[in-house]
Image 1 (cartoon, helix red, strand yellow):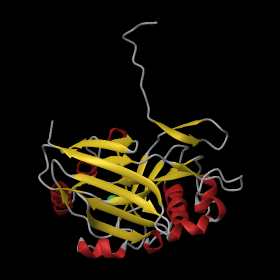
Image 2 (image 1 turned 180 degrees about the vertical axis):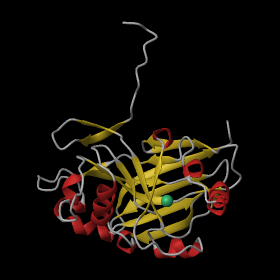
Image 3 (image 1 turned 135 degrees about the horizontal axis):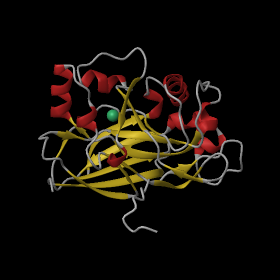
Image 4 (image 1 turned 60 degrees about the vertical axis):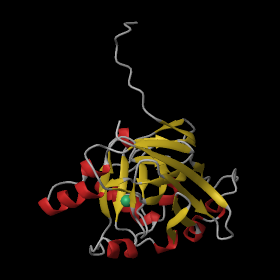
Length: 251
Ligand code: MG
């Protein structure tokens, strides 16, 4: 074998499987903007009439309970956006809302880091958001929790028993121990079946595709030295997913 041969490595979604039992590799990172009314309001932006879709490059993805993110030199105003993140076990086109949960491999908590100054300039100039959302490490996600619809539950996961019960889960984000964001998934303007169905009408989805489902209000600036603690909780306060991100200066 030629040692100079290019061997691409693609991130594996550890703990998750495709619908036919194979390991799951990360695919496209889809993101939903303004999916909580309070966040649209704080951005002084209208509530979208259909899901607002953008994507992130695969290099933005970091997986694990802890991550270190270097702030990009191009931005002076990076914001945290805590989000519920879902990974697909199988793809498809024109997936119905009724079938949507059958395409879900698992879920996690993640942060959609955003260079707000670059995004604002892009919006004003009518340019895409891609750069402001896509820097290396701008999509860290916690370890995934598998769902097993129609199978014997393997986790203390409410969605194992009832796909609708995820709506009672709570997103939370602290910066240096101070609460900045907190909301219920039930306050999403477009719920998960709607998002999967909508995305699959636009694009052919694939196993391993990841969906950032939108952030509640309370986004704020992070700086080098900050520690972001993102989590998802049961109604009784039990933590189901946890992600700790440490911000460092531009390298
Ligand atoms: Mg977001």
